[in-house]
Length: 114
Length: 380
Image (cartoon, rainbow over all chains, first blue to last red; front, side, top):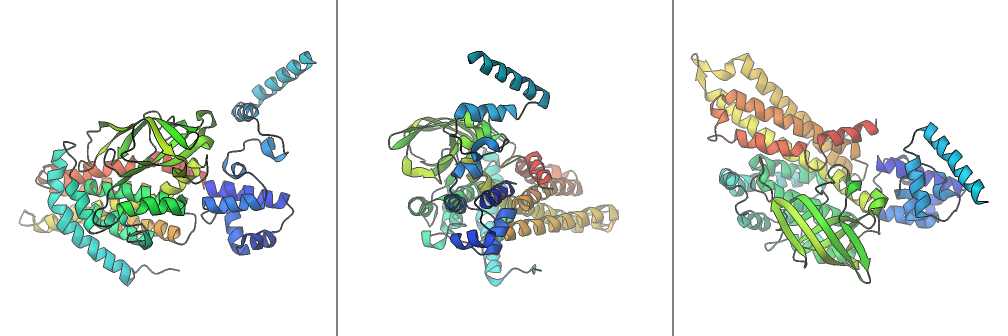
């Protein structure tokens, strides 16, 4: 369960970095088949593997380990703010209608502060 | 394809474990079951230490036996077959050393793994569960606060096997409860650390040869170098450790079931009613046939999960499956064995009622069977 999620994130980060499996695998000292198995979640990823991959792909370790209900959280290079992270986490638990209502409220608050 | 034969080394370990279980465990099982929590019997630990079984999974370079997971499953089946309660101190030590082996750095492994090896070995324990955080690990409240060159731990752990006995514990605590999973950390804590005390010791339905209780952390200082892995990676560490230890639970369940089955089979062959042994009745023979079949199926699934771990593959699903199948099978087999022995099976003259009380625990700890089903179904 965990390995599949982490594997998907590895694939995504690798693609975002414009690397093919062969290139990343050779930089990490893995075979392409091993990296493919990691991305598919078939092989057990040790913490040391994830650290190495994170370093190579220039991502924080937390990118691979934390749940990301909303992908925009860290990928747009925005600084990670605890309050925003908490809001995103809680928002994802609400039904769509509630989320829309809150969006309207935030817009209203923003307009008032202008 | 793979073969199903054990290799010579594995057969050697199986024989060693079987002899050990027959001579060093079985004779004490009934008495320790009756003593329940009055005083933990260190004689168990000394006997295990002499056979180096506490260092079962510890690599040989640190003084352990260094067996792979499949061999460990073969060994633990034998221990479970003799007494599940007495196997608990070994199981819990295995769990903690598995974790240390998985993520510990060289310094941590050098300092702690040898402690559970050799004749003077001590026990180890893994402390995850809390009064309010059972299945939901993200609800862990034991707080780890960083202060200069150490962390300070505060909180209470519950249902900890080897509580108050172990030389060291792997303790899961949070640096920030709001972060839930992402705030969890794993620490190595010395058993004699100042501020660490044993709380209530549980009185249990079974597993009475083991000690299970609370660990209370009151401003316990843990040096920075005792943080396992990287800060805030405790959730991954716990999940990986548990995935890798579950086949061991499956194997002990198979062991208990095998003992119950063997007892019932021997009885059914000897016990005569209406002028013939009761096994001559299909009603009895079919029960025994089902028991033998289910034991074999559970053993194979347990071996498969162990094999996957040894191959470096993801064993999550197979580990959960083997725990569910083996532990539920064991309860059924023990119950049927009692049925076959009739009134005799219900008494304490026979070990069957103890087997049944013991195996029930396996469906509950290290992730209830309901949690295992959540894991399996999420991977379908």
